[in-house]
Length: 294
Image (cartoon, rainbow, N blue to C red):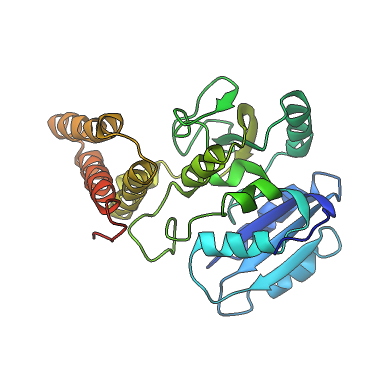
């Protein structure tokens, strides 16, 4: 159950597993906001106590609630944290991201100018370059046709009541879910929000920082990661009733990439495109019955 009366403007729900020092960078950026109208809910999936001293070190500068769980999956952890949240708004920081000091000021201004039930911004690296996907360049309403270029999990601000009404994150999607559908959980959530009548708004001026992993995509591990991401895209699009005609461009792009990269001798990128194609096709197929396809 959600508490009835908001205590904070914002609840920041951080699902974490396997990391420790990265949280210092996140917490330092939150402390730099210079305000205390938000809480941090740290949902700790580690089996050890590695985060206990980190939480203690920041306890005098941030309001942190340290929750422990042995249930796997980032979306399960986010939902657990959201159920304990006391803020009007929820946001779900990655455990290795960080934010600019004026993030909440930007959010306040955008929310005042364009009332909505959820907002999202853009991922950038330390130099301010767009990363982690294609993002629209203009502010716009978030609608069914543009959820693929206006959303990323750790830049989503969503009203707590709207999140609950939409059923939270689908625990079958995302890292640690135990399924092949390793990404696009925020698009799934947004589509549920929209289907419930919620209004969304995207603004590229609302930015957060994340390590730039573009070079990782050219490694074997990075290519395999792109496969599970692709499976998530296929699953979410079919789950929400997109036509195969709508999905076809998402299959044709990696096919074209395989051809171009093979001809130009860029084998690592050809392998990446091949994994993307395999994931997207398996995700689309597996959504017919909800069963998993490896």
